[in-house]
Length: 455
Image (cartoon, rainbow, N blue to C red):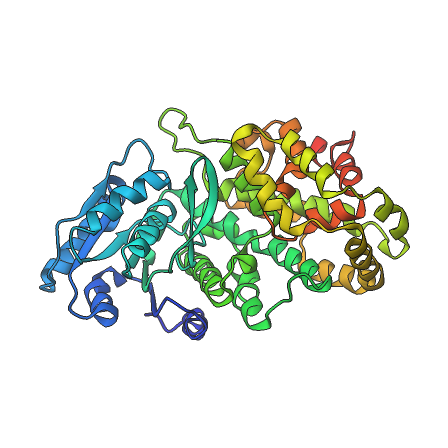
């Protein structure tokens, strides 16, 4: 483990974590896999789980190191490299069925998708696992849940985080550049996600835990501040990125929630993923990454925040908004009409917990009107402009316009309305929906000369 200040932050964060006991980040640490495994699992048997791509990236070396250390291990479980592996429940069933044939501890060699599959399969088998990261592509390495598609609906399934994580900088720098870019986008998303938590805190919906907040937000500007150097392969920028991603996962453990790392920008991505955006490979290109969708969602939500912050909500017509507020029955009809049959019922279930009756809504709007000056200043301190975020994403090699991810302007416009319906988490989409300003703000973004029309 390195002696950098970032490592000290990780060690401090581990004291808040519920599942992960050890994290190792540094140069040439792949050789330390056997020692790290022994540290957390003792003399248990190890089994490498990888796909054909991650086997070449690091899996073969991991197996060699385990052999050289005299570790008792089983032959690896290797998923095909093509077609691209998906975090679908069928893959979890395949792996968990195989794991139940023995008691070996999985050593997951891979990034987001493979890690989520192993995470859930190990959880179902009642055992921990060790992850060897092969790309700085996601914040989910140390997260407590796994983002899995089951019955056509993408959701975070309950499962424990890895017992240990190892990230070798040489392996990460050698990963495909698009994977690093995706990880950068996923980390940059914590800026608007933090703003959403500030909104929920100010309106007494979900208070901020200062300890957890600091795990994500304290290193965030440093970790995302050198996108061009990161894209060029700078190792110190890579170390900052993987540390920030791991810290986000540890924060989710400490909070027992993805709130510290996920807001409306992730709701955009989740909706697009549930509807299959970018799932089909184009020639030799892999499917569109989660991070790239989140990155566009980050810009989209930052632009929406700018429209919100341009308004003075101290003069909000609370009585008028409350009179026009729909009953749950009317809201349910709108949700049903906004989705196909495969998603509509689930969207209704997700939306119901956060729909207020007119009386409680009036109380929340009065609170908003009272606290708006302070809330607006907190949000301004937290946020970066949509143009600045777009520029940082561009420097990191990420797409920054709808067309670059195969999304039409019309579909993006509808996403602002529909993403609010697929999760119970309170975000800026809910604030604008409850104030009756969502449609107005979205129209401004797409009007002639508006943000998206000049992109």
